[in-house]
Amino acid sequence: MGTLEKVLDLISGYVWGVPLLVLLVGTHLFLTFRLGFIQKYTFKAIKLSLTRSKEGEGEISHFGALVTALAATIGTGNIVGVATAVAAGGPGAVLWMWLTGVFGIATKYSEALLSVKYRTIDKNGAVAGGPMYVIEKAMNMKWLAVLFACFTSVAAFGIGNMVQANSIATMVEHNFHISPWITGIVITSFTAVVIIGGITSIAKVCEYLVPFMAIFYVIGCIILLVLRHETLGETVNLILSSAFTGQAAIGGFAGAGVKEAIRFGVARGLFSNESGLGSAPIVAAAAQTSHPVRQALISSTGTFWDTVVVCLATGIVVVNSGLWQTGLKGAELTSAAFKEVPVVGNVVLTVGLLTFVFSTILGWSYYGEKAIEYLFGEKLIMPYRWAWVAAVMAGSVLSLQAVWTFADIANGLMALPNLVSLIILSPVIAAETKDYFSRQE
Image (tube, rainbow, N blue to C red):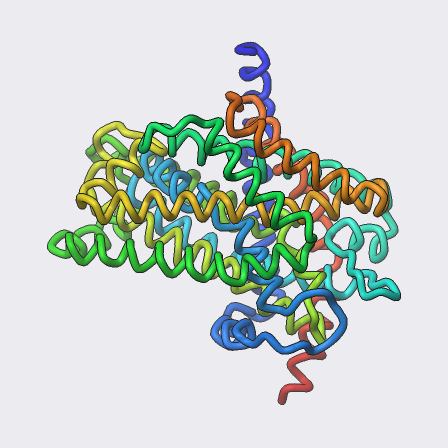
């Protein structure tokens, strides 16, 4: 197993190397300028997202589609991933992570627009959409669409399921000394109740769970910062200055610090908000909407909430604690930073992780389901759902480093065909955008 993990780590390093990160960031920047800085409509998009009325064909409301996508997007990366970036890249990584979110809004907008435009709706109103349908219908590249669906189905069972369940079970065992078997049974039961009902059931639960967990967590972070307000100004200055001058994770300034801040800030931001990955547009395609641009605007707010708000809140709390210089990494750093404020910090972290991880299991179940449906048809939907439930239980009690790395590789491979389609079809995206806004004038 040790050899396997080393091989997978090596492959993951290549997949998530500089070329893919450059392609992702380059796509963010290209689409931002190609669409005339679509981010300027973010607050208009937020306003649209808060409406729940039916405005066209689809299975769920725009709000339901958004919160389901957010359920899958907001996860351990927003808490543990941010701390990992700060530990490795210093405080400046927070700013680069934030900027990745700002420019990633354009990519999230574009992939959602294409998925709604090229979705299929049967006579019963059931919707199927996502990059695989875009690639097949708009680019006539069935083989590439199949590859995307294969990578999605693999990544879903890994990062979207087993490793998430394992994160919850491990945390509960560490903090409350509860057996992973008990935690697994509870999570598995809740998951079964929700996902057996399909996207309608998932969206309904997410409409209540996601706003609660995001608001609770962000307010909790604000309370932590208020309680330690005396160092807040210095923390903000440190984040801004070290993003361009560089500061090593264990004290002192270093020229290489700028490179590390950019590298880890950008990488963790991309992992967290999933812009360009091609996952969120799968559920965006299910939304009831009158125009692809309308749902694309709403979907783009997912990146805003995930990275521009939630990741930023975590980053400031971690840097403000000062513990990023102690050598702690990942979950250990996050836990120590939040526990700096007794009781409140531990409650915020525990509830945040529990809700974030469980929501990720729900959201990714739909992504994997649609990938399986594309590959094998509707006959495997129900068996897939039961397999998903069983995987949650397995993930709770098994050691999963190899599974995590393998799914990480699949995540990176998902992004490649999706990014290719976004660049090639950018004229279509621009034309749809121009058409929509010309009608609004």
